[in-house]
Image (cartoon, rainbow over all chains, first blue to last red; front, side):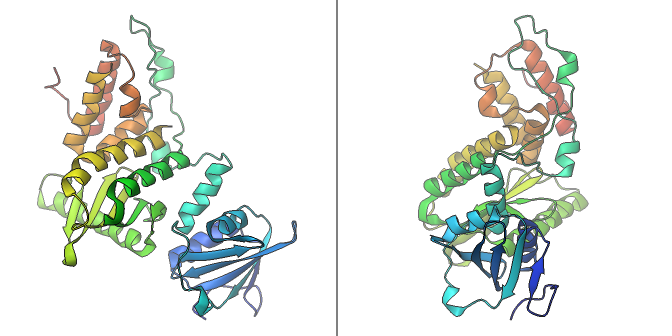
Length: 272
Length: 64
């Protein structure tokens, strides 16, 4: 069994842990396993099939795939039994990363998501666009710190725009935190690539600074073999990475139309 | 409506990348699409230019 979690007994049974926290750990560690989730409160049981930290499939009563996973993530006070992943469950049926899915469920439950500590500690101005004609605004209000929240639904809509506009050329995409490299939303999400390209972006930023070169602009592009490309867009507390097939993608359209459009969408998601 | 305010967002992105633009959006609490619907008032423009200068670490002297 390709798991190495601490367990409360020899059968790999965990009690008293929060499922969402545990799933983020599984994703971060890149574990492969089947999790049998039991919720005593509602007397239900379900299964999550995870391969290399990526959620492949889920089953819960009459629900399958994404619907089953979303249902189980809502459960509280669960028991988690860690088992070996059956070979029959090696087919990926869920696009979202575990972190993305958790945020989606939290968003649906109308829970505000605070991006990260650094973002919430920034000095934030609450500018009133409806100032009167004399421009007399409330100075006290304009300099008040406010909490930045993420509109998760808007974030997913922005991913959909990218998928629709790039079509088959988009092989994978992730929006990940600059602090930890954890994907918060994406399509055919790649947790390992998110973590590694996050480190790479830090390295490139440091290399430019250390060289006395101008800082990184809007994005960087890597030309890969077989006509593929990686594009990484630094966006403050977040970064957006995408793997595209350049032979199936009109790069002019992507760089000049689609990227500005998704940046606008992401900006709306963080400003509410 | 808001053409000058929109231009500030473009200048921030041009000179500081999307890193700077997202910091600008977070600090103002505004998105480019939101300011597009607002009026270009001198006070609002000055306020945004001030925050843009803070984000970029330099004044935007060539705006007008």
